[in-house]
Length: 108
Length: 108
DNA sequence: AGAATTGTTCGTATATTTGCGAACAAAAGA
DNA sequence: TCTTTTGTTCGCAAATATACGAACAATTCT
Image 1: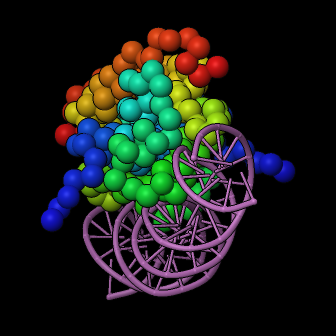
Image 2: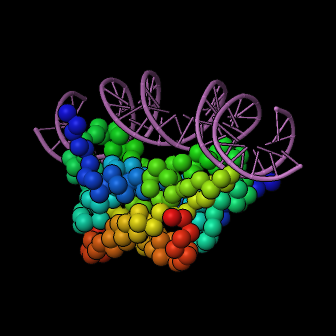
Image 3: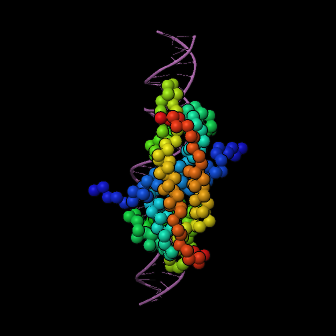
């Protein structure tokens, strides 16, 4: 049944990458990475989009595991998910670090 | 007019990330990164999808600058675009390498 | 209780993505 | 010339993604 078309690694990196595949979400990640505290409102202020949209982007980043949020009534505090951040860091580093084909004339 | 909503860096990384945001495209990139030669047919054989779809994914990777292709009639040879690969490597490394908020109790 | 604050969720509209088969294009070979 | 090989492009369908305002929920403040 559940035919696996791609490796876990491919699926996983694609998931991280996809979450990072929108400038608004990159902006959110950059903002969170350098902030100690990070309420929804702070993030919303940074971005030129409606709060409903911000909330949606945050949800996607959370689902992808890159961030986490916790209610601190009446606010919501968002932060980088350190564990997965480290995992992503390592995966991207390994990916781009792999030795490429050495042959120079390979592709013009 | 052309109000810039996000920084160039954010736009650029998002572009790379978006291209990497599909397992088939990750599979293609992994395959190309370890191959010296890489014709369309070789890539197609690796993947469980129709050639039209493969062609489309290749086009997206090319548009994002991560790969390049050149006609070698009657075949087409695809390769990693080393220059942009290096750029992406550096961008992702810098991004994930940035120091995170140190405060431990910050978010549970 | 009523009002204000802070975000999420809902409903909707539009745009983009993904995937496929069929048609097409270009060159080589019979 | 006709056929084969190798990929791209076209046209279409279905699924996702993006964005917004309005409605809603939970708590605090008056």
